[in-house]
Length: 306
Image (cartoon, rainbow, N blue to C red; front, side):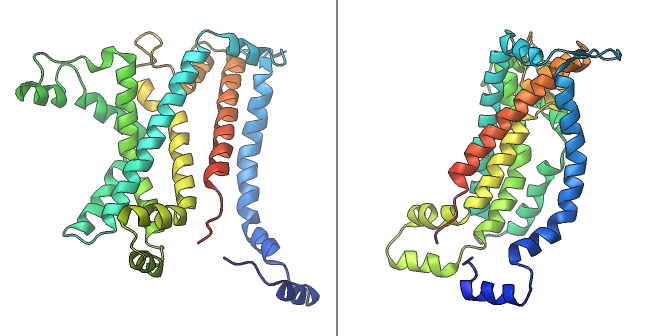
């Protein structure tokens, strides 16, 4: 959208009209106030907790400053948990974005049954992470899971595979399930954005001899940049905050092989009863998410020039 001409802005200012930016802010102010009220207290309180030695069930708080943060940074569980979290979030983000965009591109084409496919696409998104974990836990069950039965009947394996015996395999399975549940959301966002691409741009590109791939890279991708930014950030957030599947399927095991930062923070607070270190773990994760989100916005958030 082009900016308002300077003469028009000056004319409105002389008549005492509210500038567009302030008018928009005034409309959004109730939602902003409610959001800040709901977020400010938990954020400040948890930060205060992270600076104390706090044991669940004990009202005696002891000020420790940044000791909780230095403690978790020196903990041997920190770097492995951080590496798994980053890898897990990266897998979820990349595959959700690519598959969601591919599905959206397919749905922009006219084919028989498109309306039914669009309706069925919503179903995985409607499942909670608890149902997602139970479903994939059943599919990959080493004793009676249908996947092992199918592979065995097809002669692809000689004995049933214990899918959950390896922490790495479990994280891949959970990531697969999370991608499956997020793809409908991403596809719907991409579909809405792709339908706003001006047809005249497509026609002009065809006249200039641009093929489908070139038109996609030079026209559609810049046009849906903002939507791409939203999908990447939301997918990454879901990857970082994944908890229920680990709680249901592995409990962090085998050993500590499926410890993500989210699970480590939960276990530290509610099983080890150390709320101060738990809050510090989640604040480290929050700062990491903020840095990655800002980097994503800087890389993808530029205004399109089309």
